[in-house]
Length: 274
Image 1: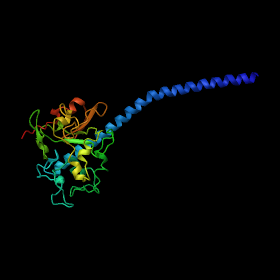
Image 2 (image 1 turned 180 degrees about the horizontal axis):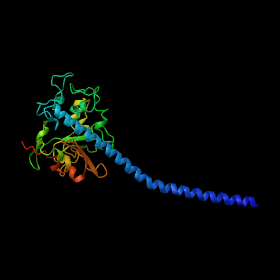
Image 3 (image 1 turned 120 degrees about the vertical axis):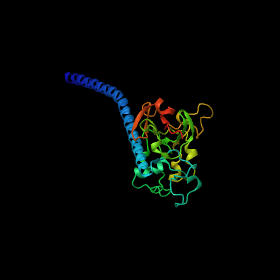
Image 4 (image 1 turned 135 degrees about the vertical axis):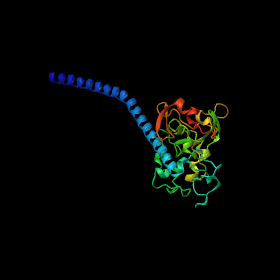
């Protein structure tokens, strides 16, 4: 009988110890999970920043090889700098006869398989599926293959936007180290832009023409009128990374910016008022 009682006391003590250990594990998990989540977010922000820095450096290398011209807004208004030769094959559709775009024309500086000789981009017309250097790991997954947008603003004076900026000389940017070239592309949860931009079976070249900024609403969103306007809705993500945004500058460096700075029109003003 005495042996049985000793066994009971031993078993009860072991159960209490087990419950204490379980409680401690629960406490530790509660402490560690937020830290792990924060570390994961920081790692994603760092990867995004590294990708933007690579793009900015590629843009500067492109300028060295292209008489200092760099991609800005991509459109059909000025074909002095076509994205690919206009007589290239496969034949270009009207929608593919566009000026140089950052995503298409900088890609050969980031991927040795890429080319700008034709609209396929030289990577089996992959539509940027393998372009991991154009990704922000923190951006929610959707149909967009490009996760950044570049500076296509044209200014007539400080604070006065005057349409779109075609490819232009890098040397005309008055303050390269203080002027933004590229930043994070906003979420598209309702596929508002995807349903407007990625229609049918677009080529790699055609896809590349949409990811730029040229209107004030692209920075802060539509203050009046429909918010579901795919043309004028906010295109930047000023608070994606722990309440801040990553951005690359014309001089080739990249940095984290506060929400206010990323959405400040003055940060995008290149000082070229021609």
